[in-house]
Length: 179
Figure 1 (cartoon, rainbow, N blue to C red):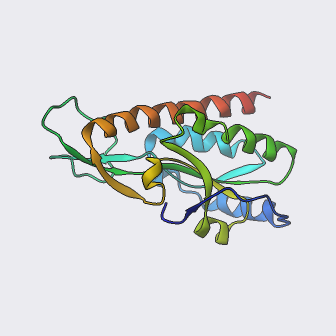
Figure 2: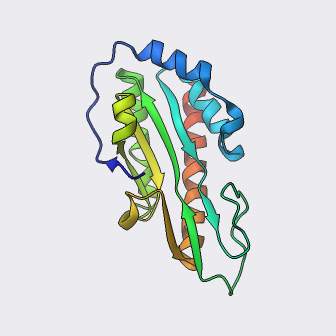
């Protein structure tokens, strides 16, 4: 995200419930990358957060130029450069005990690979919705970009990390929805 910044402290938001209701009411599941639909639905089941935006992360290379491509990278010796379009999840989190607990769990996800996963804020989300936070899968050196050109081997590594990242989010949701 081009405006990615460090984490901000929670602020008072008396409009949280009306903002959540509006966001949920206008959410179009048809615009969400298919692998993320269940994750978004899971977060919607938690009353102390709601999703603002997300992307599965897309790899464009060689003949594969579809910006919505969901296929895994091919095993190839001929692909040398890949355009990676960032995988991320942006959430608004309520300033209460449950929201802060979720925040703390989300803050642990970069431990999967701190060189490739960041948890922070994005200025333009925060300007629209206070207490909004973003988790992203992006090389640390490019954390402020929405897309980057990288080598094929690094792209394969990012794909692996991205899959672990979304797997961890699914497990986090399952644990919290069951509570």
